[in-house]
Length: 225
Length: 223
Image 1 (cartoon, rainbow over the protein chains, first blue to last red):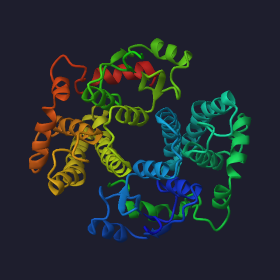
Image 2: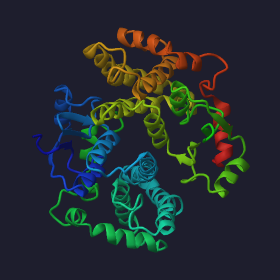
Image 3: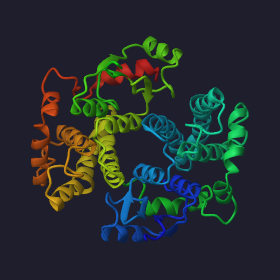
Image 4: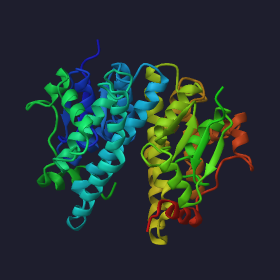
C-alpha cells in the first residue's frame, strides 16, 4: 500500500505545524524531509515537485499535495476528523478558519521589527482574548460536551488546542478568564495520540529560535518573494 | 423552505466577491445587505450575528456563516461544485487556494499608495504569469478537457475565471502567453449562469476604488 506521508519543509513550525498536529492526532506516522538552505528549496522547485513553487508540500497517497488548507482538508476527511455531515463540516470550517487567522498573527510575531514587537504582542493577546477564545468558551459551555462539534473529536479540537498552546507561549496565563477552555485543554491534551505528540522527542517543533530567523528568511527569501 | 441566502458586506468586491461568483454560477438567487455605517456594523455585533466580529457573513440554510472559505466550501458542496470524490476535492482545494493567493495580491491593490501600486502591478504580473497561470494552462493542456477537474464545472473553474478577470483589469495582456486559458475564459464566460453574472445589472461588483476604502474605514472605525 502507500507508504507514510512525507512532509517537505524546514525544520520548524511555520505553516507545516498544523499539518503535523493533525496527522499526529489521527495517529498517522509520517516522515519529514527538512531543507536547510535555499538551494534545497530551489531544487524541489526545479524537480517540479511544488505545484505553485511553495511549501508546505506533503507526499500522500500518490499525490504531491501543496497548499496548507488543501492538505489539512484531505487528512481530516480521510481520517474522519471532519464531522459527520455538511452542517457539522460548516461549523468545523468556521472554527478552524478562525484558529488559523489567530495562528497567522502569532506566526508573524518573530518577523516584527524590534520597535513593533510589544504592540504586536498586545494585538495577539487582545484578539485571542476578545475575538476568538470567547467564542470557543461559549460553544463548549452552551452544549456542555467534551468536543467542539457533534459530540465527537474533530480537527476543530486539534486546531484549537494547537492555537491555545501557541497563545500561551505568548502569555502563559492567557486562559485565565476561560475556565471551560482550561478544562478543554487538559482533556484534549490527554487523548493518547495527542499526549504522545506533546511529549519530548515527538515530531512537534519548538517555537522559532530567534537566532535561526536569518537562516529561515534566507531560505524563503522573505521580503523578495 | 429556507429563503434565499443573504449576504452581509460592503457594496464592493472585497472578500465577498468570490462568494457572489459561486452562488451566481450555481444559479442561486441571493439578497444583499450592504454595510454603509458604523451603526449597522455595531448592530450586527450586538445581535451576535458575527461569530468572530467580522464580515463576510452569509445567512444560509438557517446558519449565519462567517469565514470566506467556510462559506465557499459549504456552497460548493451544496451545489455539486466540489468534485465527485476525495481525490477531486483535493485537486479543487489546491487549485482554489492557488487562485486565492493570486487574488489576495490583487485585492489589496486599491489600498496602496501610487508608488506601492507600481510595485504591486509588477508583482501581480510576475506572480500571475510565472507562478499561477502556467499551472492551470498545463492542467488544461495535459488532460485536454474543458474544465480543470473531473471533466465537469467545479468551484476551481469559477474561481479561476474570477481571478483571470481580476488580473486582466490590472494587466490587460496577462493571458497573452496562455492560449488554453484564453479559450477557457471564453468557454466558462459562456456558461449561461456565468454569462448572466457578467452582464451589466448583475450583482457582480465593479473594481474597488477610494470610496470603498473610506466606507470600510468608517464602518470598522479604523484610523
